[in-house]
Image 1 (cartoon, rainbow, N blue to C red):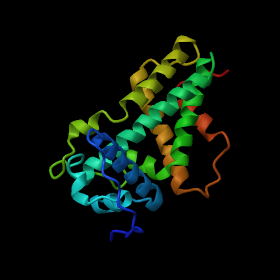
Image 2: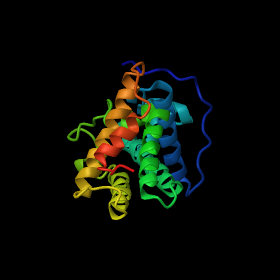
Image 3: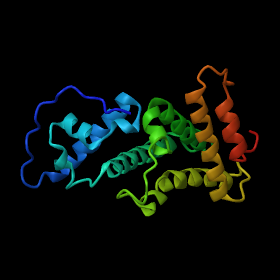
Length: 214
């Protein structure tokens, strides 16, 4: 894929001493903007990011050694956003564990639908860094999503404690529930014309969370 030439941006004002963290944040924000605009991780290069914020490409190196490192920062940012959204959903569900679980699951699906490019990048997409050729390591990737998955397991556990679900393996069932939600999110994105049943999400959540009938 040829790199898309962005409209020239004004030269960025140089950070004052001690403001290096600000440039790092601007680099990540520019990468997210490019991803949203182009819908393709390959549009994010050192040159395209540098043009977007009005700096020379070598100015990126003190903050990110290569493009995969920028992408990892984008993915981490979006996982942090996911955790925040899921926490807010859990808090909005009130005192009923079952409703909290549904709120969390629907918030997950809503985020995937509202930011499809970011979601696709978080869970694979075209961004599969070469662990031998980039600064990204297996350790960098292994914990991505742990916090959001843990939150899902916690709200499922609350359903079990309330006698609303029959799960006997919260860790495994939380993974199964996430896979079900991920599959639905993916299929909605690639087969938008399919006549999905109105309650398909509720069916998936209820079955994979082992919820009892109300």
